[in-house]
Image 1: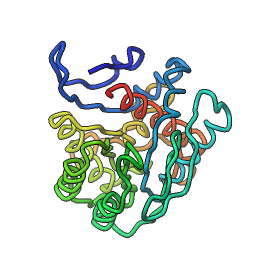
Image 2 (image 1 turned 90 degrees about the vertical axis):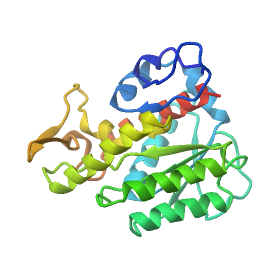
Image 3 (image 1 turned 60 degrees about the horizontal axis):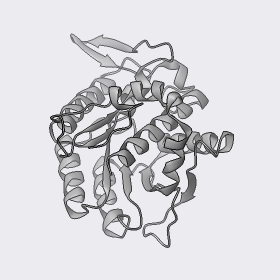
Length: 259
């Protein structure tokens, strides 16, 4: 598998030297820190990508961050944002198609995403599909989520399916502990099963100065969102949305490097 040399040290790989088998790609806070050193040409190549992104309010923050990056430097950050419907029409390279499907509950988000893909949001219309939980989904079923997403992958071998950790809040709450439990399971499962994971929770937990935001609850260390990334304790402010958007660019660059 070919890797981007500038990002390879911060990608989790589980493969032998010279092997061409699939390997997990885990994008976390370290990738965000490294993205500014990635050559322009590497990111400009993403003008060939087509992405589908289902989300709610925090996802809208991330989309706004991607719009901001494109507006500031379209040569370096080439992806444009377009609204998506339940079914794709004609799609274009260099576009992230986003649908704000709201918060109907975790199970409905899981089944709804499968339906979007079945409706045509897969290759060749798009080559990457992403489904994001919100911080209000701490009780999401890990088994239901991974089983459904894996079925989507099996049915669409030409489409990269991106797994996503549950985002955090700034509070020292039992809900953050539930999110931590889900996210830790997903991290280990993604590594063991060669999946592509966008670890938004980890991106939110580390400050720009490199300090992890965490607290102890019943003897367990639990990640929380760094306060510098949110004005209301859950949604991303300007700094937070830029950070997450740079993470998405890291993710897409690494996906493209595997082809």
